Amino acid sequence: MGEALLIASERLADFVTAIFIAARTRPDFARETAEHLVAANLKGHDSHGVGMVPNYVDAIANGHLAHDAEAEVLEDRGAILRVDGGFGFGQVVGRQATDLAIERARDTGVVTLGLRNAHHLGRIGTYGERCAQAGYVSLHFVNVTGHDPVVSPFAGREARLLTNPFCCAVPRDGERPVLLDMATSAIALGKVRVAYMKEEAVAGDALLDDDGRPTTEARYLYEEPKGSIRPFGLHKGYGLGLVCELLAGALAGERTIQPKHPRPNAIINHMLMIVLDPDLFGGSATFATEVEAMADYLRGTPAAEGHDRVRLPGDPEAESMERRLAQGIPIDDNSWADILAAAGRAGLSDDEIDALTSAGRAG
Ligand code: NAD
Image 1 (cartoon, rainbow, N blue to C red):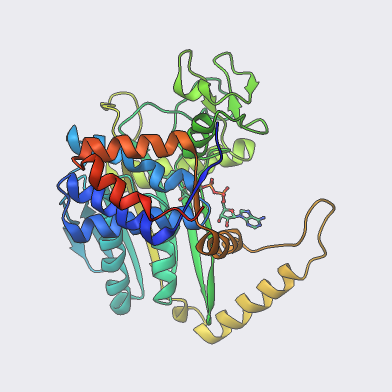
Image 2 (image 1 turned 135 degrees about the horizontal axis):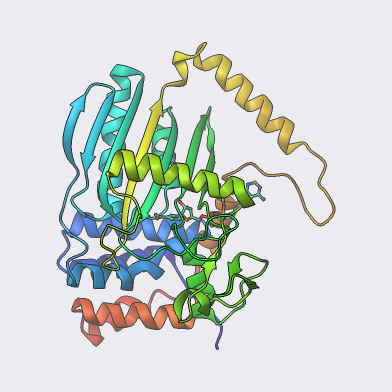
């Protein structure tokens, strides 16, 4: 396998926008989705970046992704909003739902919004960052339905859940937020996909083979016989993944991964989102002072052996972004070949693909 390509982020966003437009997506939705994916790559989450493009192009073609759908309010009860995503681009309907919650929180102080039937919402931290930018604390519980489970419950050897992400964003004065944004599996499925594409081993004991034994081979998630991904943190990660399933799936989405529901190999995300004005609790000034004191206290911890320093959640993403904005986004050969093939399936000609990609390589 050759060296990974390095591609400048703006050119990558232009290329991905063109692919989605060729697949009949509205230009503004194509651009928004492309920029969300490229931002995920910039922040180091290749699992939720442009590697998803082939999946989305195929989902449009087979009717699992309604490319022009918008978020629709089903029920408006003040601080409670129920919103349907119409199986539209998660990056679009997720942002629209987040904006509805932020707008409403200006009146009600706290909002609980259930978003159901979004296609893949991508990097959930995107919505947390948006709330934090508006000055709000937010909690996001997400489940994934529509395809076979890949995550085994603690002590189980067969998959019963998906990677159900949890996110919490806490705004800071003049600084980027504290942003905890994580899959509840030991490793995000997309990271197993990236390892599979790169033909690399998956480090640690995140994966189980079909007999429930630890394995480093990503093929157990993509080829028969199928294994599973463990939950993170043993029974605790399993518990949080289940909470996401119940709050996002049973409550907001009215559909969990339980086996009576169809699994047509689509990616459907449901999200329960709580948006909260910190000024409601003792005043935002006290809150900001305490948040900053804790940030300093934690970052000042002496580093343990094998580590350079203590970070806050969200720091690794900011560091990756600085590096990749300067150096370009690395894309492995297999993923790039898949994206080029998807561009062709979407309707771009070879000449158009060449024109869109040739000048974009940073190295
Ligand atoms: P991860 O394990 O890389 O990071 C998880 C969290 O830990 C992040 O908040 C990160 O900032 C923090 N972190 C990492 N290293 C740290 C350190 N040294 N010190 C302090 N904090 C640190 O993320 P993940 O679990 O692989 O998830 C990747 C992405 O996948 C997330 O953006 C998530 O939203 C997304 N996801 C989406 C779906 C979906 O269905 N849409 C499903 C699963 C995951």
